[in-house]
Structure formats: structure tokens, C-alpha cells
Image (cartoon, rainbow, N blue to C red):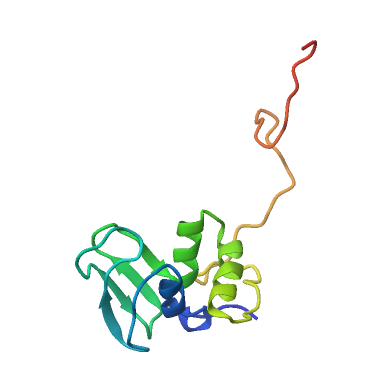
Length: 126
């Protein structure tokens, strides 16, 4: 199964609560103190129906998986697995689609011969 829209993603409400936000509402647009910085005012805004969040002070924004990806420093696939555990859901994998709905680039087995990325080189005679 492919994620077709943000409603197919783990709940942004559960993700925000996991990171320390206090939310009383279960749907609609809510303003809240951002859990990603020391917030004294309600600078964060979440649309629980559209499953998105933005903080107008620190700039954190995105859907539930994008938030987890940026906070945990992991790729989207790993963030999706983490978000599913946080929200207690069992969504299927992305199946080759980006969250925007576009196709992911195909992985190539060709390496640039001038590149040393991913190759461990050992110095001789050390």
C-alpha cells in the first residue's frame, strides 16, 4: 500500500505529545507551546485534521513523519517506523513513493570512480 495523503500517516497529535506538547483537542486547528524549543507563548500551530505542524518561532514544520525525521536525524523510512511506534499504529512501508506523492529516484549500483564516499581507505605502512 502507498501513502496517498497525510491522513494515511501516524497522528501528528501523538507525535507532538511524545515530544512534550500539551494538546486537549483531538481535531481541528490548535495553537500550542512548541515542544521543540523553550516556548513561553503559543508559537506552534497544528492542524490535527490535515496532520501538519508549524512553529512560527523556531521553524519546525511538517507532517508527523517529517517532524520525527528532523528531530531524530533519520531518513524518512526510519522516521516512519519510529512515528508508527510512537503513535501505536502499523502502517505499511512507503513502497517507493515520497511523501509528496512523487516517485523516489531509483538506486544505482554505479559509483563515480573519482568519488571516495562510502569507501574506507587504509594507508599503507602505518
